[in-house]
Image (cartoon, rainbow, N blue to C red):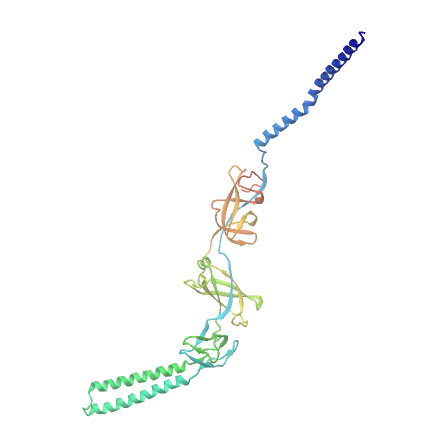
Length: 377
């Protein structure tokens, strides 16, 4: 009958009411749920704005130290070997075969002692030949002199014979001189440092056979080479302190006695010779020595704490100084002259600079903002 359409109407009304109620609830909840999302968006925008503007730099605490000016000479340190001024490379004047070498390395010899000799067979024959030429020239000169008195020979013939006699005598003198230096004798008391030839060898004239160091005059020296920069500040007469490994508890005094005027082409250094006073100690050639040289001439250096140096390499490095605004810094290149205890002597780069940053330099860059924790006048 009519009950079915009524039922359908009632069911439809209920569904419509439910839908409207859910829609109202969703609208009521939506503002509450959207609030966190809006806050998150605002926070992100604020963070982006903050990043764009950049974080505020924090001041780095630093401490200043004064730059001291001092005039002094840099102590130079070198090493060398002990020797004497009477050192020589002994050789034969003429070439020949070595017959005998009478000494060994390290032997002590006396003045005039025979050290080595060549085979004299050929040399003695040359001396004998020269002597025979003299005898013949003497006979010729005597015969022509008699003939000239008898007006048989001319004056020119007589003069030629006398010239030949003179030439023969000089040739004999040369032969005897060469024979004398076909032997090697010690010129003074000393020691054999090195033997460079052996018996039976053929040696050309002037080839060293023995290296000899004379000790008769007791004039002991240390020889070594210095760089051109150090050579420029050294002078004859400058004092030197000499330490010898053989006497570790004693310091010897010396002075620069020789200073080369040209560099050694082999290594580019300038030869220096320091005369050393034995002071009653026994010296020997070849002793290893360490030297501290004190040049007389000095120059002005800027002394700064070693902690102020950064990025040091070789003789260069950098230091930081405070700008006039007392907040920013400047990075300055400097040239290092030498180290003195816990300070550095700077030869250039700090002209007119009164203070450097000594503490905190490890954290600094050229864009750093600093806060000075001490104030030095």
